[in-house]
Image (cartoon, rainbow, N blue to C red; front, side, top):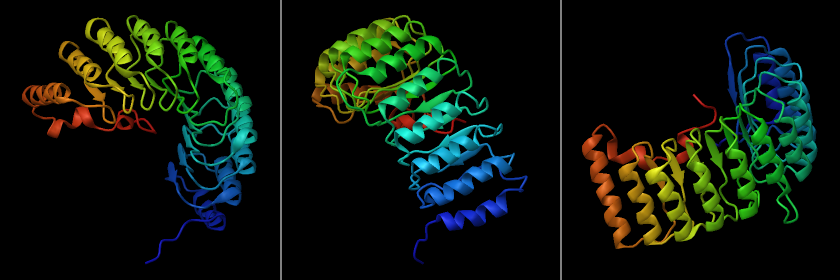
Length: 331
């Protein structure tokens, strides 16, 4: 049977069926082709259906106009908790409507706008709104379209973290963050006591940024998951982190340093920190430069975990994918 994708016209049928259905509380239509036509009916559904708490519209060819319709529908919606718009090119215009919506809506808890081609203006708008919004627990702002080298979006998001004490999860993948921007985020983490998951993967952070991060992790007791994948922290950065994790920090559970140009010495240091830190149980190190010493330490840790935690099948707890720990929507 050939695969058929849901179109905007098809979504009209869904709208007719679901608008008065009291039993449906979640709708997942990701990877279809509903476009702005379907977004119109999705917006109407949000206005008519008062049981829907989860809506996934990922990668549905929705543009700025469709984004505007959905954002405006959420002005009066009081039931939706999770909205995923990943991969819909709503651009800066659509992003501004969602930022404005967060000034009004007081029920939405998780908003995913990753890969939506947001612009600098809309990212700054989100940072500004979130200094006041105390409902949103998680937001994904991955891969905005940014120009220039000033890291302005990072500065504003750092300021937001100083003021916001409800946000639990923040995704800033591909924000062109460099060491200066990382320092801004670290300064915020000294004051923030709510953030548990920080994703700064695919940026331009080096070992100098890790020096600031290692220092803040000595006093920060809330951050549990840290994604540094696809940066360039190298051996020096890995050592800074491992020293803090071995002797000071007891809150971080998972760390991803995938593809960070780390060699054996740095990888061994990170692995060794797991021996003395009972909380730090998940480390992701593939895509780096392994040597014999790294393999020996990893093998030793594998044996230890299998011996002390026999219920963990094939070390699944350590090498599970990081997004599974705090996946969208959170359980």
